[in-house]
Amino acid sequence: MSLEKVVLGGGLVEPLGEPYVKVVRKAVKLETFPPAASDAVDVVASELDDDAGIVGAALIALHRLGV
Figure 1 (cartoon, rainbow, N blue to C red):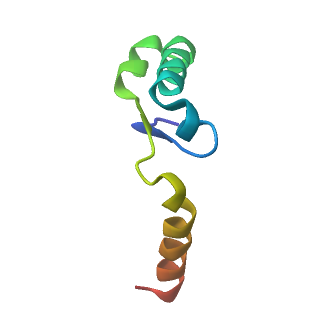
Figure 2 (cartoon, helix red, strand yellow):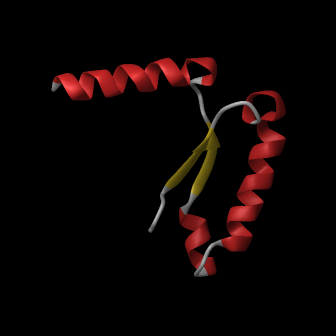
């Protein structure tokens, strides 16, 4: 699998913010194989915050309705 972006959200990201995202970025850099591939992965915090669940549910509903 080749990921371009990892979006972090939920209970840990909101209160811990950028310091938590930095820890995950570092872990991705250390654990990605081959190591050069880690530069292609962008790790970011979700911009949706508490709205992520409702936005996701709405997108699933629209998809199932064929919209």
